[in-house]
Length: 574
Image (cartoon, rainbow, N blue to C red; front, side, top):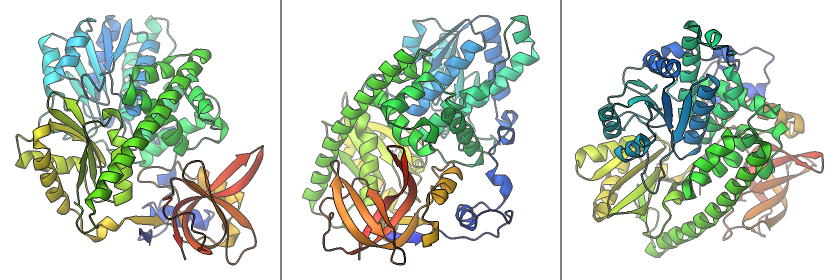
């Protein structure tokens, strides 16, 4: 059973007195106590001049544009990579670059990043510049291969750097050693956006747009793409990222977005005028990612690149079909994984702190989602592996609070220099590969390293809440106030509340979702609640007459009627 914990407040408030007390409490619990930290105007973005290497990158790209060189974007096969690639292609073409193309490695053939093999494929199309987006910081061999062919490389990335940096013509990455840029949380698409801002200024300084009779592009119109990639990559929504996401959401709600985003939202049955950051993460992101997981991310990129609405709708439907297929594959893998764990008959104390799962039949493109599902169930870091051919296996890792998963892999690699072939990632997600014969050695090393960071109590799982609401707060106005107080996301979580309710009705809808009718003990009104992916072994529980719920206030709109709805995060029978 998960432990319910109220978020602690250790700050003194410096907000204006007219701020709603509930919002004040919520912000303070997220470490914010100054009104300036809530500013969402574009003018409050951190200046691009603070990014190390950005001036050099702009010099290289400016020369390429002026001389009519071929710039090839090397992307990644996830939503951040797709949006980064789309952004770079769209902006460079609007800047008047003579030839802009892109190449995204197929995860099943080449794996991640600018590898020597991808450089060889790229070289066939004779690029002058390779511009990496959302990758490249670990591409030592790939950059060397490009240099050997006299192809310049400009790296834009946000992943953590290793001990060695590639010998690129320029590197822009807020997480490279020595970079003083205040926001280390930029997604790949955010880094790319900053580079394009700086490049525009450099082109203006050289009077490029006037000489070529081109209007100076307004890059704010691309914030729909930036917001999507930022949320989909689950990077922390610090102040800088909140500005990017807020501005992007504002544009999308007003209909000022690329046809591909509109089309995916239509296919996903989302109201564009009521869009939230959660819709970017749970409606658009998975459909984009499905292309990279099962097929070719070029499908997702082309959906975002096209300006033709019928084409966008056709591609969005293809993405949706792939996502349905992805869900079916994932569900089958999840059932197999849970069964294999159940067959071990391990109690919580005997289960590894760092859990590894491998099946030679599992799909490489879906192991990350499976790792996330198992992590959520067992409250510990999980790595799921699939066969990668040639005697190697590939793993996707997901972590929990308190365990920086990329640092864990780094520690294992340093103690076992010949164990891991390659790895990389973030605090909460990472990827790696090694020889299949070394699987048992790695699982032991992984569990040992994770145990240094977690206690048995940490493995119980916690649900963090913002306390209880009074019955006066259960209204559409409060739900709207909370929705608009974001954007909410990673490291700036949407408010979750906790309380006791009288249970009037419970039934399963869909395959495994629990719909509830509940009432506050001191109130008269009955509210609808929904708990997705309920454990069918525990619910419905017809003996339960009262429940404790951790929930979010939400607005349900059906047949033009809006009503309050509770999105249930956790349920306990009383």
